Image: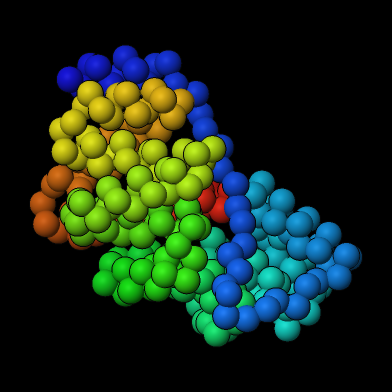
Length: 237
């Protein structure tokens, strides 16, 4: 059956990802001015291009009392592996971007292999923003890391239907199907989502690590979460 997915993968094209900001219904955001919005967009474009230091430099010109600035700085600092990301994400809790704060804290916890804390943060984020596909996808990844297969499947299916143009959830669903030795469905989904051969190979590698020993299941897949989650903001990441 592995031959089936290898043949299907040879026909696949690479997908793309996009980013967004989730506004909570509990508070209103102060809207940035036109020049500030332009600077925020420029900084985000730089981050998506992998120019993290340039992105951060541009963000440092903007006032931190704007929650949109703190969110983008937190994301860039997280990608850099800087500790300053965590307090910035925490500063978003209780604001209009609380879901983004919980999401970011979940990403940081997952990168530390703390799946328990990551689950709590991401479940809260999903309750605040149930239609945000990237949060649902990342919650599914944490569930999959813990071999909570039915819950992971539910989150991936939800994310796939919410964001049909984003291949991330499909990629993770392929990982889950390979983990279950369901090669036929994995090949069909990979082909439908137009995943590249490398993406399919990465999905297979993750599935094999999850399928491995208990130690591997608890540690190795979490190392891939930063890659998966970062891709969901447009910078792989």
